[in-house]
Image (cartoon, rainbow, N blue to C red; front, side, top):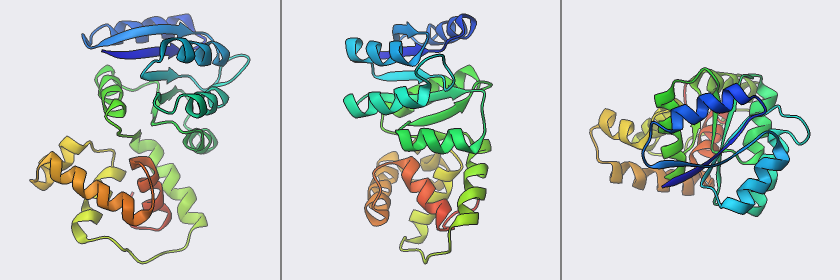
Length: 210
């Protein structure tokens, strides 16, 4: 069972998320929080696998709570779920260590898919937000020659488009194991540790089209 904490200061949103999570038989709700302090304390008490974290909450906000949870409980994955699509929130949350950043208009199926994905070590960035990241890094960064193979670049491009390992395997007609092997090679070559960092590096150095 995947233990999930819902952290949002609006009771109606918590209720909606609770109903969505109840659709998945292998997800259990470990607790609900109305602010960042409660979210951190619940994560400590329950050892939750995933925290659905709102950004703007009274008291300690979601960004600070993310940093504390990631520092104390690095195995706990955090999905930022917010109405905000401004770049500053996105960059702050990536620096805070979130595994995924979703807008609150996300479909229930995509939310559940993302929860399962982050527990497998995957990361997800809404394609709408990826474009904003690209614009910022494209402004700041200069180009850099690629050190990846053509197939690795293909996989990196699909990562930037928000595709899962399974989807990448289907599109490239290879096995998921092969995709994972390529990802390991990509991470090593780019000196990064996860998908989000790889995509950000690729965007910054113009290795992908967004």
